[in-house]
Structure formats: C-alpha cells, structure tokens
Image (cartoon, rainbow, N blue to C red; front, side):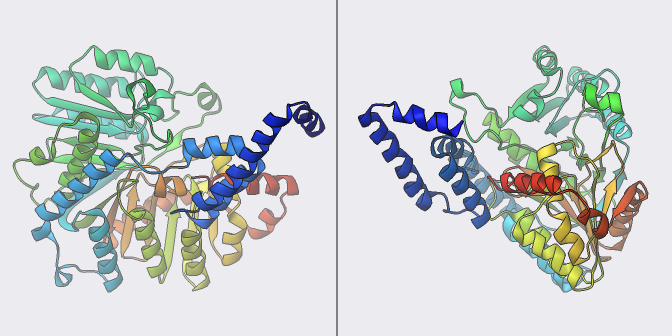
Length: 494
C-alpha cells in the first residue's frame, strides 16, 4: 500500500509535488510551536505524533478537536455569573472556627470558593438513591407537587413508556397548572439516543420551555469543538428540593437493544437534596439556561431567599468545565487525595487520569493509605475502557486495590471518600474529558455521616465485584497490552 502511494506521488507534476512537500514540512514545523501552547505535554505530544505521521489529516483533526475552550461569549457570561454569585454569597462563608473539620478540609473548601464561587454551607439534608427506576419515579412524584417552577437539566434524555414517559407527562401536567417548566438537554448527548426525533416532536407540541445545550448547528453559525458537552444532571423544584448525581434521564438499559439482550444496565447514584445546596444547584441551572436563551434567571433564583436549614449536613457545590479557570474539579480531587491519611475509596466508570491525579493516587497508596478503585469489569465505551486498563499495572504495583464490578452491568456512579472526613459525588468522571471538556457538577460533603453513607454504597458495589490481582493482570497477552496502550495514547488528544 505504501509503495503504491509513493508511486502515485511520483506521477504528480513536479510543481504540484513541490507544493505538497512544502506544505507537508511547513505543517510539521509550524505546529511544533503551536500545539504545545497551554496544553499538557502528553496531550501536545499525542497531537504532534498524529500530525507528524499524517500531516494533513492530523492538522484537520487538530483544527476540529484541538480547542477545548468554549466561545468567548460563553466564557464571559460564566465569569460574570461567578462574580455575581461570589458577591451575593460573601456573607454566607463559614469561618474556620465554624467548620468542624480538619485544616486540610478547610483548605479544600477555600480552594473551591476561589475557583468555583460557591460557599460551603450548613443545614442540608441529603438522601441517596441507588436504584435508577426508583430515582426517576421519585423525581416524577416531586414534579407532580410543583407549585411555582421546575428546572430540569440532563446530559442524555430518552423517552420510554415506563419511566421517562411519565416523567415528561408530569412536566406537561405541571404547565397546565401554571407551573413554569424549563428543560435543558445536551444536543449531541441526547441526539444519539434512540427515539430522539420523537422526543423533540413531543416537546415542540407542548408548553415546556426547552433548549438544547451546546447545540452544533453550522448553518446557524453555532460551531465549536463538537465533543465539548454539558454533562450535568440537575432537577430543581420550587427552589425547595433538588436532585443531582450521575444518572441520565433514561431507562437503565439506555434504550439499546444490545444492552437489553444481555441484561446490561447502568448503575447510578442520585441524591435528593434539601437546604442551601438547592439554591446553588438552581444557580448552576440558571447559568446554563442563560447560555442557551439569553434570559437572565440569576436574579430570580429563589426570590424567597435561601431555603431554611433542614438538616445537619455541611456541603459545597463545585461546578466545573471549560467556563471555569484551571480545571477546578481536578485541582479539588488532587488536593483531597494528597490529604488522605487512612483510606481513599474511588468509584468511577471512566478512569483515565492525567499524570497529576495518577501521582496523587499512587503516592497515597505508597504512603500507606488504603486505596481502593471501583470500576466496571467491562465498559460500555471500548476505546475508553482499554485506555483505562492501561493504568491498572501501575496502580496495582503501587498497592491500589482494584475491584471490577460484575458483568454485564456498567458501574456509572462517580464518587469518592477520603478518610472519615470528606465525600464527593456528582457527574464528574475521573478522566481528562471531565477535567477539561465537559461541564460538570460535583458536591463535596463534610463529616463522617456523609462518608459512612457513601462508603456503605461503595461497600455494596464491592460485594458485586471481583478483586483484580497483580499476578492475574500481568498474565494478559501482549496483544491486549498493546491495544490498551494505543487506546491510552488516543485518550490524551484533547
């Protein structure tokens, strides 16, 4: 094939061949100084390798996928919202003496405040839901009691008669009662789902106000890197109760015939929230709504004031994504992991860390911290799963215990706990996509009660998992190792 390609080049006119060779070399030389700018060295090297092997194709892919930033308009709006929220909540910050937590937890809370605008707040009540069907049914019942407004935001939405059909029906019924219903879903995330056109027709025929998040519409001059996605999952009702976590608004088999055939379902963690964190989630929704509609909801979020204290849980909301500075979720996760002294338990469906997180986790294990990683034995995204597996050898050698959740299920929960002090859950995976490309939302909870609750859930996952040993992993074939390593290289192309 290569010989035939070279012969074709020999058949070209001399002047055209000279132009192609000049462009070929010019692309390589110019991109040497362009690609490394504001990128991780590993990411830059992966892009340069692709450009050096395939200059024209590599350049085209870089121009299409190389920019991981949102448009200047979106970034500016996010910055304005961050400043507005910071000023409005300045008096809500807890003083160090008021926060019953170790100094390193206070430091992490300050980091969040400086990078993400939301204060840490007391008086929350949180109930975790581990059954996907029960979660959607609970959200549907909550919508049925709405009196003022319902704000809905999910990465993936799929209509089915048993679960999400009644959910959408509850939204439609709410509009007939005079309730204001706003609905956001990610454009490409939902468009890939079976029945997308039917869903859009249903929304167009009703009174729900809805928008696609980060729409890709070249004819309307809406274009950006197409895999920049809004990955958040939020439901807020009347400013009094909210739901957030890892679950998409779709039945557990994701409407995939292949999944139903083998009994594959996605295992998720959602939380029902009451208290001040509800307002923070509402602000995140309002920010994303304003990005797609030019309507400013920030000033009208919970006009009656911050919800009164309803519980004894202290927490802090951490929105993240290209609209925030310096990959704030990654910085928080690393800070917490380096602070662990006894135990660190991580659950993530897509575990493709950058070097900083890999060092944080392996260093913790080498310091004597008991580190556990819970992942799926078989992932739903083969390329990502192979990239994930390329890290197992280094983790196992460092002393990390890796538990693989039973097939054919996909362990889709995203959470981790640090010692007996901090628990984090939400929509953010432990991968470079969630750190750099996706808009995510995470919740950091302070105190042993929250840690025990999430550890209990992770213990249930471990009961359905098998422990991977270093000996077994080293016994894999060279072909499998090769595939994992190639996939790992592609995962850095951001």
